[in-house]
Amino acid sequence: MKSFAALYDALDRTTSTNKKVSALAAYFAAAPPADAAWALYFLTGRKIKRLIPSRVLWELTRDLTGWPEWLLEHCYAAVGDFAEAMALLNDGGDAVTPVDLPLARWITERVLPLKDMDAGEQREAMRRYWGELDVPQTFVLNRIITGEFRVGASATLAIRALAQVAGVPPAIMAHRVMGDWPPTEAFFSGILAEAAAEPATSRPYPFFLASPLEAPVESLGPRAEWLAEWKWDGIRAQIVRRRGETFVWSRGEELLAGRFPELEAAATHLADGVVLDGEVLAYRDGVLPFAVLQTRIGRQKLTAKVLADAPAAFMAYDLLEDGGDDIRARPLSERRARLRPRLDGVSPRLLLSPEVDAPSWEGLAALRAEARRRNVEGLMLKRLDSPYQAGRRRGDWWKWKIDPFTVDTVMIYAHPGHGRRATLFTDYTFGVWQEGQLVPVAKAYSGLSDEEILELDAWIRRHTIEKFGPTRAVEPTQVFEIAFEGIAPSTRHRAGLAVRFPRILRWRKDKPPAEADTLEGLRAFLTSP
Image: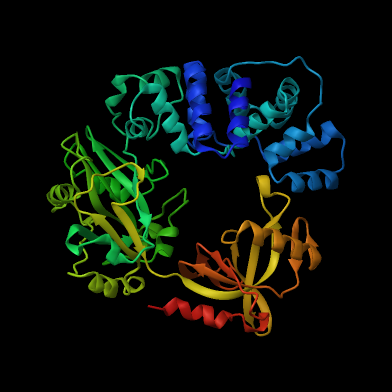
């Protein structure tokens, strides 16, 4: 645990990508394979389901410190991170001889057994664990136990480091760690060996991600060199059909078993050794809005009514494996040509993403203007001779999205951020006018520069009119232009509307609050083309 906590601290203290990769590579090269397997598990975004309710940890901290509830809440608000606050508050608790068990033993012998303990046993176990670890190790343990493990390094950096240790290209290593795998000594040793090139039956491929097109589309060169498709508004996924089994994987490497039974049933008719890349969509005689698909996301039980109200289809736009052969290195034009016959007559739930046919960039721009009416987000532009790469690689795939909706709003609430921004007000709630009152319509925390955040934080502290715990109501005088991708009716929100992906475009210091937009104006976007 000590060496893993030291790695966590090293990653958290630097913003240098090279230093992060070096620290990761050094850890993977030196750590016992069993420890390295668990470290990779956490560093690639996987996590153990929350084992102990936060309430139990909070009450234990209160009992150990003897501090009143209000003081603990102020400490938590100042730190901005639950796991870190618990580690700091419990520093110097019951004095116990430090224990330096390997990470794998901590997880298998101490952490995982917590799920089978009652609340009292969990409290006693955590009291002992906190006493045996220093603050950095306690912090990491708390993050693991609460299922909120976050660190200043992406999965991509961990894969780069592991590729260095194994002496293989990052793309190969990325494929080896895709999918569902056990964090065991055998697994970790296997991915460092050449034998790992043989994929597990269920293993998907690393997703190729497009970059936003910000330059004029004409800068891409001749129109004839590019495939244009609609940018589908759904869940990016791969369908893997191997050895008589079907697996549906999301881009977040979540196995969607049982979530879309109609797609799993349809995929049984695919040829063996086929992997499709595409989008899960709500579909009935055409693409339905993403809000319809959302009614299925997160549901544990799919009733007949849910399946009928939000039927799903898979819009395939690439073929990654054919006849068991990895064909990602082949040009897109060839992969698309081989994709069509793989889908012909298979199922009405497995569709081929159509090419958007326009001979010129000007013609494509005209079709792009129809995107919202078609329930899509714009266009995808893919170079016809491009291979299927891993991750975000600029140059071959571009997303040419439609312009977002924008609205002028008034800031009405501010909330502290998290981590390094825990002492600043960085999360804001914005409202629009309805009958002389401001109605909350969006929350956003991105879009301002560091300088603007500092300036706004100072203003918030001077113009607070009411406090609700860490949240502050402020004088409704600051206007901000907010952008968002979509809007839908909602019974869960006071305004009766829910906006999608809101972010701040600019601080409108030139505009008085009385000139901010209205709820009626926002509702008009529901019918916008």
